[in-house]
Structures are given as structure tokens and as C-alpha cells.
Amino acid sequence: MVKKTIQVLLRQDVSKLGKNGSIAKVSKGYARNYLLPNQIAVIATSNIIENAEKQALINAEKLKQEIEQAQLKKVFMDSIKKLTIKKKVGKDNLIFGSVSDKEIASLLLMKTGEVINKQNISIPEIKTTGIYNIIVQLYPSIISNLQLQVIPFITL
Image (cartoon, rainbow, N blue to C red):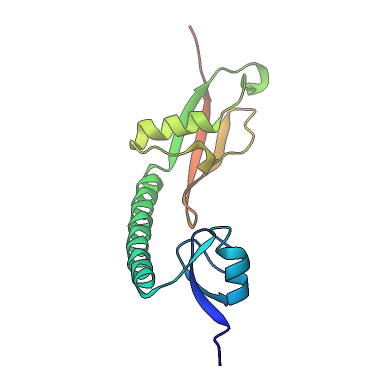
């Protein structure tokens, strides 16, 4: 009896099949007619499977280190608790312009020495002086909550 499935190593993410670098069992026709000609996968030989397993271990270790780094950043960020920024104000304590995530990122760089991508900073719409909650996403599952205090900038 002929085997109807074959193991392939995926070169890119395929929905309902697997992620890049994973081994998947697929039908021979699917592999021969779609995956192999479009260079989405290669036939998994014993050497390729062995290399994929080694790469998976390396990736798992790298992921573990990234999570540990994010945990340390979170502990450091949580120790800061509050950031303060000065803005020019008009009447009724309305600020001119707005507070941007880029300003928060540069403020965090000065305070912590860590470069935080501005896309990972979530701030509410800030129109007046006061205290606001901001969320910094250090890793997909690791989030730090900080307070941002907006105070008036007084010129003499």
C-alpha cells in the first residue's frame, strides 16, 4: 500500500498547517501541486528534520531569553510608577497640541535607558493637565502600567 501523506518543512506560515520552520504532514498531492512549486515547503528528509529540531530548540531558548528581558524591563518600569511631562497651557488648563507616544518613548529612554518602540505605547487622548494612565507593551504577554503626569510649563 502506498503512503498518502508526506512530511514537509514549512518555509513560511500557512494557516491551519503550521508556522515557518515547523514540520507538517500533508497529502502528497497538496505537497506536489501547491506547497513545493510555490516554494512554501520542502520535503522533510532526516537531515532537514534534525536541523529543524535543533533550530526549534535554539528558537525556544531565544524566546525564553526575550521573555526574561521583558520581565526585567517590567520590574524596572513598575519601580518608576510615574512620569512627568511639562506642556504649554492656555485657559482652563487646556494644553497646546497633544502628548504623543513619541514624547513618551523619549521620556522613557531618558528615565530607563531602554529604547521602547512608540507602537508599543498606548496613551489616552490628553487635552488638559492632570494624571493619565499609559500602557507600555514590553512583550505580547507582558504589559507595564505607568502614570503620566502632565503639568503646566511656566515661562517667565
